[in-house]
Image (cartoon, rainbow, N blue to C red; front, side):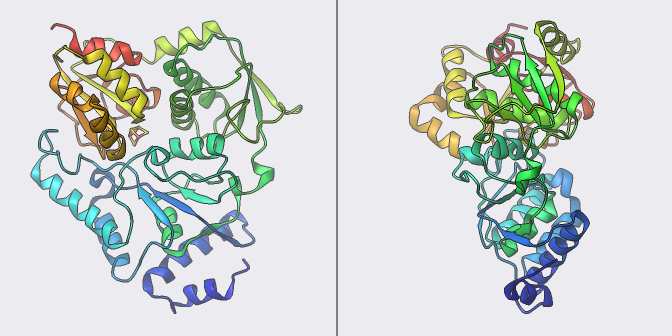
Length: 393
Ligand code: F3S
């Protein structure tokens, strides 16, 4: 791989031990994937933040890098294992909290913004069209490639961190025009009336195309919330990193002529939606996977006004969206109902095992991961989740 003099300097250790280690990771990755060179990145989003996933080995790795490493570009974090300030109200134990705060402290010493969210694009980390970036959270990767028109591969925790501490990533995969061409055409005849319908479609299509690149034909656009849910679902049932949709994807000019075709009709929508629900009465309701937008919080506040929740109800969002919700008066209404904001975290990365049996959620991705964690799930609309959370027991 061709390196610039500055990159060679980093690789030789002249820029410190952390930069050397990171450059070794990037060069090894570039060689595996046949990258000819590295490319500067303007934004990084690091996954691997919850102590539940990182453990002691993760703390050790981060602390070593933090001895002399520093972020060189704007870098934000994926959700942690708890709300960083309100963790006691979430039922998190103090042993876990202590270790989680140590992880966060290591990231802070690395110069990374402690914005723990899977929707960095709603919290001030919003790259533009054509920008090369290195993001880790799979739903945000799909959103960045498909809606923002930025360019990123699905980075792992170490490779995203290495990009942050060097300002570079190997030039391969979704950074190159030739890999941003649709591999499948999805003919959509189902009527999609909500973000949950987009999620169900994404879950179906992700399974069909696996790590392909679907072009959705028959849809003329999608809202931010619909694109967010679609992105998350495509990346959870499959390994999708990008989709094309007219009116949404800057690169979606015309449907490709030589691509495999998949159909998504009304019956498919009914079947996949039903398949995302198990039996059982929910004892936990959680929305915001990916993290809620301000518009979603506004809807929840409107639906909760004057009502009380009858079971644990989490609204997962970034601290930025929570701050905006405070200003608009939504938080007061939500909290008066007994519902809880879960900032910096979510129902999947928080250590909630053993506390609940059945979760109600409006996210296909959350259903997928909650089932993997041994819980049963009910897939409802946002309105359905609020009804469930306030239903008399
Ligand atoms: Fe975000 Fe957690 Fe879902 S990180 S995409 S809310 S699994």
